[in-house]
Image 1 (tube, helix red, strand yellow):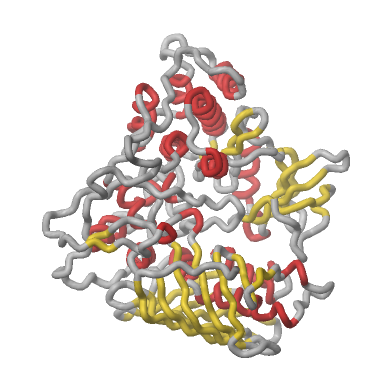
Image 2 (image 1 turned 135 degrees about the horizontal axis):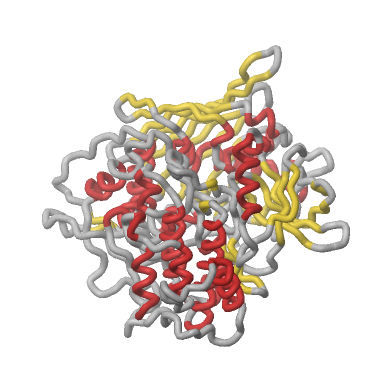
Length: 610
């Protein structure tokens, strides 16, 4: 839990806020207390999402889910400003955090986890809901067993399912997500298979490197299930079938885990009750169900280490073509949630899963990004005689191309200049940065920069590592030291200026904006688009919201446009971002921010000052 920030409310309805649990696409989640002192989780929803009948229908659907290994919806007020939803507070870490801190789950613990999560999905689907973002970060390990959370992107299942925007966490997304096809409950079963693989081995079955590599494996490769065995291996492999109709239903998964044959299966509610009971048992949950086996170490290797022989080689052309032309080529709209902004962002472990074999024309030269674990990603051999790659033409092609290119060359020098219209805020900065695109759940850009701006010494050094800011060698907590009017002392201004550089000039922001673009205009290798602020990622949104003193409604009426230039290797060279804000009786105020990039190379880690 994080402390409350300066602009966070002290009360939401009749609930007193205590701290922040996280922030996502729909809003901020707070830990709060009832009048009697009971703790609850309160999601304060962005007003733009709560308008209309679709959100109310989504909430009603979530309330239909039976209370079997899921989090209960306790209260809601959609007429409040802003609207909010109150649910149970589960005092426990996520499965992601447990595996990261304690290692993979094995034996009876893994068996109970599998039963509990399958029970939750069966209950969710029984209510006609698709979760759409089932992953280790959305499974909490509470004192009464695993609980599945976050129905923020769930939708009612209709006769056609849902198509169009792609929402989810890539290593746990089913092929149909990438193809723009119907996405129904079968996608949740695929995500369950991926999540159980992660729980048992410490790695997702299709890897956790760059978006391009993961998407390619999900669409065309086989899952890495080494470490699983017996009936559990067969069950997980069945769930990871490429074709949705070839996967079992969540109820069938649960029946297999409970060792019920099709003929003697009890009533559906009885199955859910049995699954819930077995998920919280302390002793081995053994009804003779499938043997659940954790990772089996290969002699001489560590968990997640590369297997003998290394990854199969693949040309960058094939990697991009396989992803860009297949993934969402026909959907026309891309809304990938690549980078969760809350405290539960998935820092995915490295994996040894191999890319499918490429043709024999690949050269023997292999480029490994970064040279250190900090930039570990897929080793992508490059064919020296290969003709220049064609320029990407769609948002998904552009995101995939940049992402794959920066897996090889993550570091560059940059120069930045920009400011806000009708204000004295104008910032210049220069230095170097390193883009971390290997861990899809925690994509970020680290900076070592010198900044110039009003009321600060020109050339003040600011270092940004893992979204933590260091000014003059010391850690800076910007908003905790603001005065009652929200003003920062002069010594913290360099850090605040740097937040604007990161928000408007980082590669992460470029990828977020391109991913949010329905289409892009292109003139050779210059791309342009306009995006409403309601679809913009949280980093850029937070910076502009801070400038507007928290005026969320005004922000949602504004929009950004951008022009991005990339070189022949698909690396950004210039990025111009313009924010257009409509002011009553005045017209549009246009704020402009320009960043240039040069000297791309393999990269050396930026470290926090000691």
